[in-house]
Image (cartoon, rainbow, N blue to C red; front, side):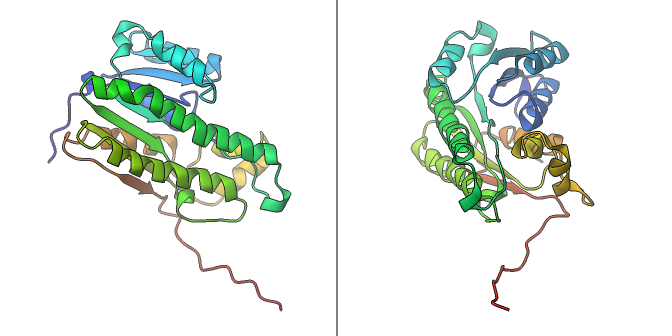
Length: 258
């Protein structure tokens, strides 16, 4: 059996901590004795999370990761107990719409690229040098099974998650010898606010992907993230892909004239 690292050493910077995977991960690390910096755009959600976890364990900062200057300012202003970050959970991301490519709102595509790609690389670049200077750490990026497997309406979302996967793999090569581990977490069907965001608040539409099935939940993914970061320091999980037991692969879609 593996001997887990001392979780009280963990100082975890989390983007997108106002709900879903990010909030669940914050709870998991604090429960294990770690400290978290929880960031996101919804201040009231962050304040509730801090009140739940305790200000000694959870530092919050309202942040839109598409704003690189704001990200740098948040990092520069971290109080001493939270300054020694050794885990980065680049979790913030979203999907918008499920229309065929020719019918989509181009603004939705731009928002997904700005958040899922630009926000990801801003986060990693802003924190990577500090990890190296402090002797190492772990970067966890959030991909998706959509980064490997296409589906109708998933064109740009899936492309952004394919970027996350390849970025993490390339990053792993760049940090070789720096004592920095890199993992891309790639969930499948998981019931969070993800679908509600994708369908812009339409609860009926948002609930349809989960009807009649048993999806994963945010705590399942948070536990998987926690596991990858608590393995012995000589073990690096490059990619971890998860699906609900009720989700699998369908046949090829073949269009026929009649």
